[in-house]
Length: 225
Ligand SMILES: Cc1ncc(COP(=O)(O)O)c(C=O)c1O
Image 1 (cartoon, protein in one colour):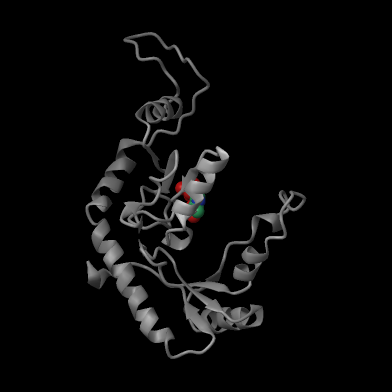
Image 2: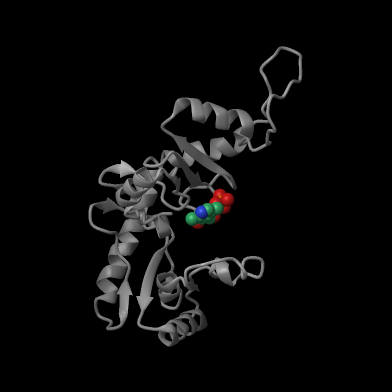
């Protein structure tokens, strides 16, 4: 998963998966336009997925896109996501359990129009991030999260890392009280009621970030388009 649009160390993960014979499925939901050493996120694993949900860099209202290197697997995904109907002039025969996950043409048209502007959207988000980098240089204890080396991030959601949970709460309080919408990281899944009894390894790093990260306004600016 390429969190907030920042490419993860995907080559290391791919090597581990190869060594242990694990299929790599890459969640690039947040990282359209982001690359790792020049290669698009979502193209390192067996399957990648990009989200076009309403909160993403481009949206079709809902839905998304799956990425495959293996053409046959791509065809199979297309088949089972479009009701697994065997093409025939009049017969309705379905050769698998299928799903009605096709993207309606009208939604796809929205996506195509936005794809043409993707570079501009990302340039705007990166400009916003650059301004945050300059701004937060003046603050001790607030680190603006930047793209890892050898990567290009779409900066889908800009983020700061505060010094501890108390500082995080203070930052959330001050900004929201003053009309600036900021948010902590999503609630950790192991804390949700339906997963609270699932096994985990203590999640030390996850909890460290959950206690410190705040997402700050990151929208594309109209004046950049
Ligand atoms: C990392 C990640 N994975 C999966 C999803 C789910 O995508 P969708 O909303 O298109 O189902 C999202 C966000 O919506 C996401 O941020």
